[in-house]
Amino acid sequence: MINFNVPPFTGKEMEYMRQAVENQKICGDGEFTARCSQWIEERTKTQKCLLTTSCTHALEMAALLADIREGDEVIMPSYTFVSTADAFVLRGAKAVFVDIRPDTMNIDENLIEAAITEKTKAIAVVHYAGVSCEMNRIMEIAEKYGLVVVEDAAQGMMASYQGRALGTLGDFGCFSFHETKNYSMGEGGALLIQDKKYIEDAEIFREKGTDRSKYFRGQVDKYRWVNFGSSYLPSDMNAAYLYAQLELAEEINETRIRLWNRYYQQLQILEERGKTQLPVIPKGCVHNGHMFYLKAADVEERTALLYFLKENGILAVFHYVPLHSAPAGLRFGRFHGEDRYTTKESERLLRLPLYYRLTEEEVDRIADKVKEFYA
Ligand SMILES: *Cc1c(COP(=O)(O)O)cnc(C)c1O
Image (cartoon, rainbow, N blue to C red; front, side):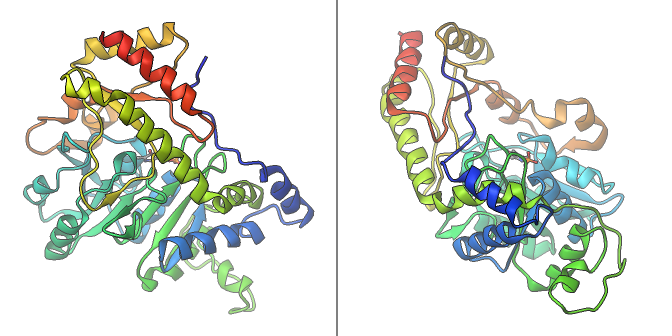
């Protein structure tokens, strides 16, 4: 049986978690949290990285920092995970969905401007599969209309756009370290902040509305309740698990890209014969091997392929029923313009297993079965 996902594990995790316990600092913002944040700040060249309990929570912090309020509108794709919308809907905003591009499954940058109203406050982009949205165009629009840009870069760690790390291109970037992502701490995430002016508020939102972060740095002699907030900081034990993987980040990234390339080589013949479509990586985008998918002709063919692979001991999956057609999407959102690709393309997409500990032999076996299906 080949699982769809196996959480990343490199070998040092247990030792570092034990160290965290022995440090007698298992709550948030201990030594490993500091090491992870520093590593991410240096690697991505961002002003500030705050480790969080999830990407969902990093997105919630971004919504708080962007001062999203009741009645505001946030433009986003419908083809995404629920958290992209949840974070803003929790603040009382309306999700305004626009169509995706069929090549990358990312928000179509050319449809954003038409969806802007005087209520629009932000654009939330999702870098699907670690492949960047067309950020030059999106930042241009945001600047023109004075909008905040939040990057849901849950899948984007170590990927880049024109040489700049995903998560650092907009105002706020959000990473996920869930067990299904390239780097994990079980549940966890990070908020990346570009403009220093947001850092103090971010620290306060993350620490229950207090200035405890300043207190720990010795900048105030007692900490106080200064604003509303929540608890968005992860345990240092979880950060210790993540740190083991950050130390091997390049190796994990190279392994995933090697496996991704192998899938591509093996399955290219099917694309050439018009049987299937493979992912597209636009010029200027460097991806991180987060996901390998292919597109079947339609939903019936996809169901048959999923079933065929399962019969052969291979667990493939699909995901993201478009948010605008979900019960909460109908309540909290609206689709602007025509749904040309969101529904149609989402029904064709099938994800193949891809994780750090997958082997090239397994990729070959999976690719052979896909070819057998189409033979
Ligand atoms: C995984 C994922 C999330 C949620 O991440 P959590 O860390 O589980 O909260 C949000 N958005 C996208 C696009 C994701 O893939």
